[in-house]
Image (cartoon, rainbow, N blue to C red):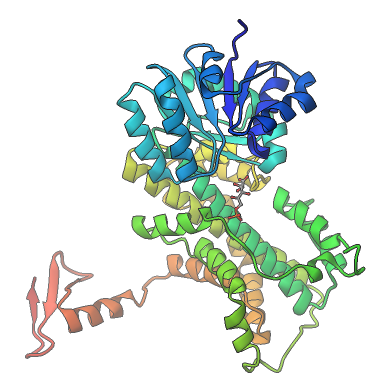
Length: 474
Ligand code: 6PG
């Protein structure tokens, strides 16, 4: 009987395209879906792209895999993933691998990995980015799990991943939940990047008075420079698109309420737990949330705004480009800080520069910019922040006047720019000599005897606020 090198169960669009990608690269692939019609349709439509071994039951599916078995599950994160694991794990043997290619929460991945490890099965939580096109033509792949499982899986995954300068956009991220953690932060950065682009559009439209088609041209120009990226490229496409039914710009006929499936929110929740400031990502999540509160927005529509409405500044688009670049540096600095904090917390030993390398192609945030991040980590692998890298520090310094101007303009004319504002505030917070946190500490000590530390002596102190205000060592 012919055996498959790898199997994919869950043949919705991502699973189907991943299976096709594997088959196109010459890997015989077993395919299975809960409803057999999908399996049949895949083989009927794309059977000539490679070797597919369709299976109508989990037993037949597992039996068709060479050993150690490599089984990829591409189903919805959460309960459906647990259900599929429960269905397949009893059919597997020690040394076999279950690869979860969905957007699972890394804590679930850790739990599943630990449970399956007890049974000798490798559970490989794997972030896959690039949407349906990426899955088919080459995604960015972020596998976690054991180093041993990567030995058996890595070559296959690297084969189907996107390549940049001949380097595959896939590497072993780290043990247990590391892959899904990194994918989660990738999505958080994606949210931040998208929000900053949205604010740029809004300002070009309402502050500079440009029409969507004109703004599309601005983005096209930006995409030839340092901002070159997939998200900038598709922004130009979306803005240039005209609605066939009305003849209006497409962007004007779409309801302005952004949806979210949860990975951005997880990034922020996790950052809160780790104590990592990711204001840019948080504001991006909140901006989507605000947009969706139709009742709140309707009730607030008549609140007074400023009298000034537009700026006649011919250089405004260039300023927005600088604000966007500077804010983008902050977004990535915050995301990488979270990756490093997660890595330290869970003992993953994640190579940050390698993450920048595998995000250069295939994924949603792919960008020329990632080469710069890799270079920054090459220069100083343990840098506490990307902001101080020579290239980024110079770019931030060069951008800062324009950045401040854009944030001030937004505030003056009443266009919300939470992403730009929080990014600038983060930059100013980090470079501040002194922060007002000293006052916060004083207040905490006053009302709750929470103590404070001094700039000139070690130890914790408390002032007897309700008494004679002498200071005591705590
Ligand atoms: C990717 C994307 C992908 C998905 C997002 C969308 O890397 O390919 O990030 O995972 O499109 O999760 O997320 P929202 O629905 O939350 O915007």
